Length: 256
Length: 373
Image 1: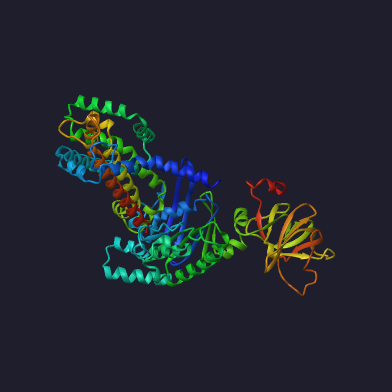
Image 2: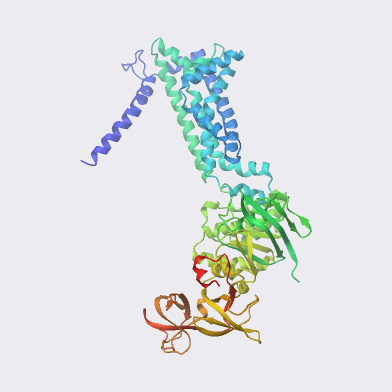
């Protein structure tokens, strides 16, 4: 009896988490037009998806945006984390606190203020405005991930490298970066995921010249649920699973 | 002749207004094993980090031979450090860790391989070259750290409490090994520790530090047998401090001192003495003799603690005036009086000439105030 209670509970939790996903995957192979009856196995929605040129274009746009936003925010974020970790300077606490403000403030507030800013400086809404916005909300996550790694970093390591004849630049290249590499990768992946599925901020700062996937899906769903979306969801799921496995593999390798 | 290799003069350093080093002068000889000994916060680590180049003195100079190193960055100093927690690069193999310093010198590949292999053989780790640091035990990591530092053939090797993370037995083994390495390499070792036993057993000379000032500089024997002041006497080993009062100075370089009412004749100390002056009579526990209560020599007291230590038997004896005396005796199975029981009355004595005299110090701790003149 006592053994069954936790098991049942756990099963329910996992059902709640995974049943919707399983339903989505199963129905992406459904031959039927409606989402609630089974019409046999088929790949027709995948075909329809690939033939939907606007959709494919939005997918590439989203991937490219996520890739560039994650890379830019990892570069800036890593340097910010290093500066916060290594140096004592005026306004350090303020800077640190501001990162949390960005992270904690409602997305809608960030979206409106970014839009207002872009309109003010006369920036054409499109790839650039999206990139700037995505870098803004990814940055604190990268900084915090890298800072967490740095806080466990042995302060004697850079000294040991200097002691053995490395100058500051060589030390950074051969010791500091390799040691914090897992955090850089984790930060990058986090930024990539955040950027890929952002809807709120993107809605405000995107323009007609650069359509991205979440917004495309959102507008599709508004006029009625097409089974194509299930196929798209399945593809995204496979993609994120591959990314997850890849990141775990890199982490494991770096530990060895 | 002993030649000065590293010369520190007038080194001063403050952290947040607190003086860590106070115009310190120290000459380190070529090829010697010198230990900086002191409690935490005495400035010993700061001094070592200054030699390595990680800290910069507010005032004073550091010179290696005739080369001024005071403002040279660590990477350009011909000194290498063995860090307290080894600071091995976790992402590199043992081989790459040891090779790091030579790669920085841009040595040819062949030379790097040979020298790294030699260094690893020297610390008996040639079979571990491909391992990562986390796959090694503490003692092995320690040896990699040493190999990594000596492979550069530094003029001076700086060791920052390198054995403090090891267990007792391993520490003893590494102490012997470090001594052997130092003899074989002929490199000057500057060793930092707070462990006085380690300092005494390994060093050619010991520097006792407190509050950024050198308390005493001398051979382990000098520091132990002839401490320069009360701090050194207390910090290095266990000591009994008996209050003495000079009775009179004799003509033949001896003085008569009143200790617990006994008139004892001592060698005249280095400091000036005059009749009636108070001083400290220092006796190490191993210099104390515990005698039977009916012995005519000695001061009466009673045993309050006995600790069996294997090779010695340590006792705590309370004298009648409340003074606590530590005694450490070697076993002598032929001596029937040796085995006293707790609470048993005894008499405490010593052989004149084994004592060491120190003047009373004005800044003495409250417990000495009673003996001040």
